[in-house]
Length: 274
Image (tube, rainbow, N blue to C red; front, side, top):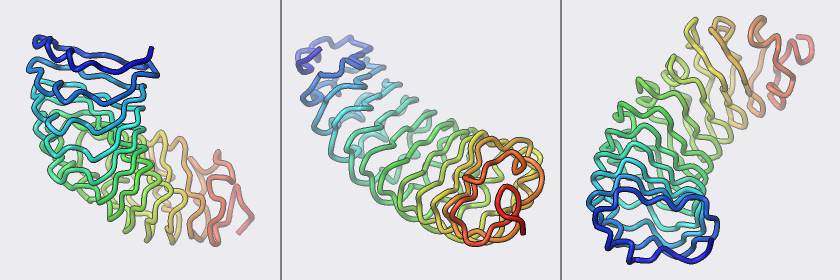
């Protein structure tokens, strides 16, 4: 399917759902007038060739629960008005060319359960207000140009289960609260500029399906408490400056050498003998 979204769609003032998903070749701008549809609950335009900016008055859609604009060619910033969408539960802006900073008051989106902003050109820092979104379970800020430190408060979020911050310019140390949060099951902090040591805060309730800290500037030893975790699936500590013996026991006895490659002086199975 080709063509564009006609502004005449806005004449349907009782419209609750617009889904033009994965039509591949729908192009042009998102009509600004869609922000005047008072009953709209779902706006799903994923997988097209839409360009231009997200309508600045998108915050007028107070009943909207799903906003999915992923996999398009949108530019400009995230409109500040987006934080007025008090019913929004699912936000997906991945794989566009959206730039600028995440609004500092992003935490006003109190109903949000998924915030997927990866593969854009976002800059600035991670707003600490995100940590106040009680229902947020999935946060993806990967493959952007975000800098600064990881807010300690992110590790205190009660429902957060997936956090992807990989491929940014994030610096500072890894908050211990991120690794001790027993609800987080997928944590990807790879390909940043994180420093310091890996916090030794793992325990019998730690359960990570994937923990990727590779391609950073981490130093010191591998935490011995990792062997006491309930489960560690995929673990990647490669391309850092870690040193010392690799702990003995789970999960290390089943990991391959690629999980530890390109560190300063790690030794022990599956690498060289200490």
